Image (cartoon, rainbow, N blue to C red; front, side, top):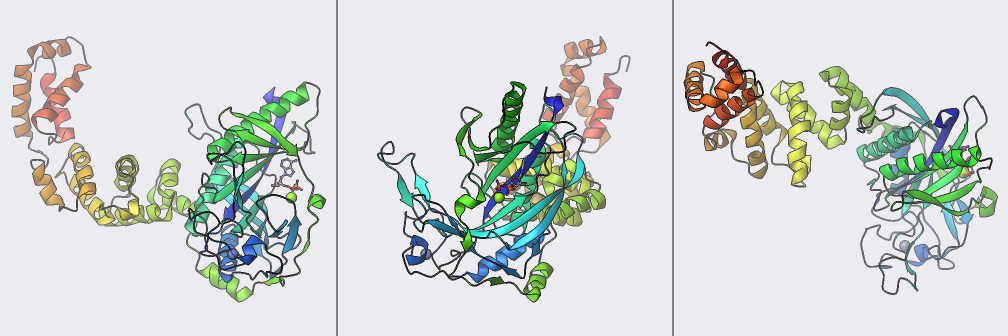
Length: 493
Ligand code: ADP
Ligand code: ZN
Ligand code: MG
């Protein structure tokens, strides 16, 4: 049934710009302060208080817009978006409607469906349009859950009121839930690279609403869209979309019609619930904000910001594939943050071995750091130290198994590598004669296993490898050990 339908998705992402102060007053944006402690006449919405635009917000917005290939308008207009809500004391939100801050952007990213194990398949480079990115102020926060008397009362915290938001509205360009997922993941990367947003979906510094509709394959016109809210992670976004696509198809197949509405994702029940019929723009009675002049952004400032942009994550990913021959998946992991990308490049340069740098960082270092909740940039294992370890492996002076044992010790202390190697009993044994002697002893001590192995139980090869590693404290050169065991265990040898 699903094959009969095509999917259309468009996303609206609200990104909190991480300036120190709010968009129209100088109150702090610090998260976690006492409720209502970071407020003033402006962000409380007291009558007569006048908003003044924070310059830093314009700089952050310009950075973000350029990173998303948006055209920054030289002049944009703030408007009042009117609605009633307890956490919006003014009765309107200052936003932008006509003449937004920026328009006509796009991103080009690798995207594809996932197989049963969650791995991407049929990855391809796709371009997704971004209609506009405009500026607005955040509302306050209504607290219902976990508060005293929370079943009878709602608490309002206005610390968030006036926090700067960039709303990034995409074109209806996504054709599957995974494309939407990959896009939001990419947005998060870009915002982290340009350092304008924390992108923490659980804390709400990045919030995503998804619009989704279905249509019969071959139909040009879009179907009626439903807006999904309360998507507190990218996984929820993807699941909510899947649920909603199935629900809409079921409605249509049952002879019904999809109603335009807003639905809330319930993460405990894995389903969406109708919240309200969707309001139209005219319900908000938008009109230009009389207390703020048009926002002017000079070309000179745009060029200054553009010149200072870092290399962006998709460009880094592609370069890692081309320059170092990494697989897409490795390059994707290693370009996850600017810090990690820099770490990898520095390690590759210092070790002269990009392949093993990639493998060791991705398969060993990140896991060990993760387990200790240490960020790569603050780890005691600097690129220089990791490179030193890799050079020792490449030079045959320590074994891979030894290196795996050394790495956690390098994370715990800045002890010189030579000392650490001594502490585990010295470097790798590459001398075949020495190893041959040890293998002889192992064979002599395990006649039963030898007989079984020679009788065809080949899995016992691993047993002998294990014995040799144990006898040598993992110091045996793995390649030589392997060859020797093959030769000495063979029948008739
Ligand atoms: P509204 O006026 O309801 O806010 P917009 O046209 O501004 O609608 O679009 C809001 C978001 O919904 C955009 O991201 C857009 O790409 C997306 N969108 C628009 N129409 C559809 C549709 N039929 N199906 C899915 N997404 C859509
Ligand atoms: Zn304030
Ligand atoms: Mg709209």
